[in-house]
Length: 184
Image (cartoon, rainbow, N blue to C red; front, side, top):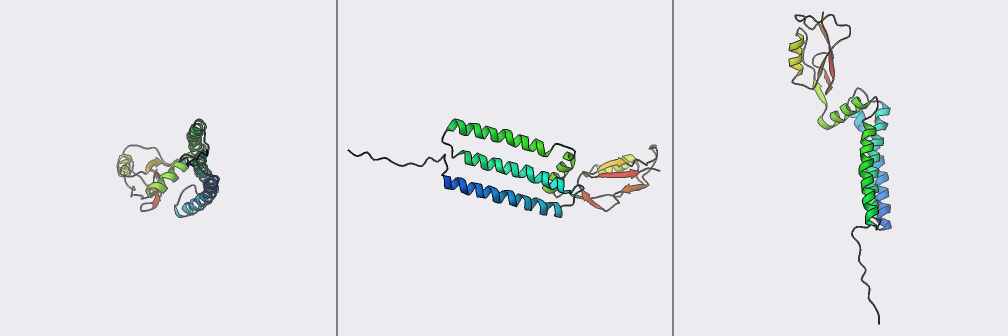
């Protein structure tokens, strides 16, 4: 007697051919991420457009992309417990990658760069000359710009008005930029 076996494809697994395609997609994605970051850094003005920040961004985004592809490749493993463990490792690794990107001395610039890229990132500096500290704070309160007295500024007596500002009125600056003001 002959037994017929039905061949079923387990939808939760990937063939070796699919794994190879995913790996090529990963390589292409990592290269594309590098190109996009270099182009974006050149197009979006930033106070810290150094090559270090480009490399840091590229490493972080490439790691996350690699981990997501690794998770997809994990579906080629037939053992469901191992697959669950690999997906848990993915979640932990993504958290570590995010911590890596936002850690260090360039973390504030990195956050500003991310916000600038996400939300357009440019604002026009208002005219603060002749304003008191409270008036300047009110004008900047409608923006993301910050008021910062210049180190060479005189004593800030309440009736004093701003005699100089940097950046100048009308300048286009990244969101969150500090406007340094000098009181006489």
